Image (cartoon, rainbow, N blue to C red; front, side):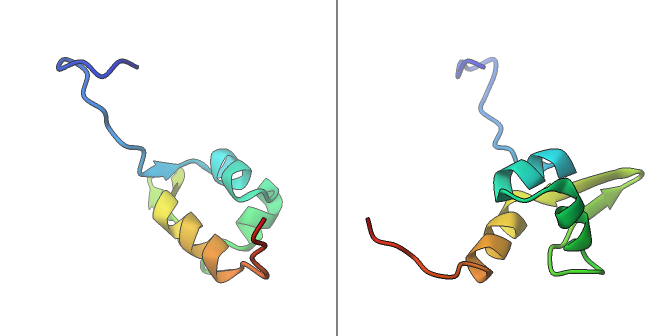
Length: 71
């Protein structure tokens, strides 16, 4: 996608479950088990679509970070 005046950059705000699992590094089944109300990851439901906000995925990862390695 080019950044011309006719095609402005539109940031991605949410992703579908398969992409959310890839981003977080967990499997889709584990993602489902961690999705609210069963778990701590909130989602947005629009009709049959389930979306995960990138900000929520980042918060989930930050909250579950064990040890930070300075390398």
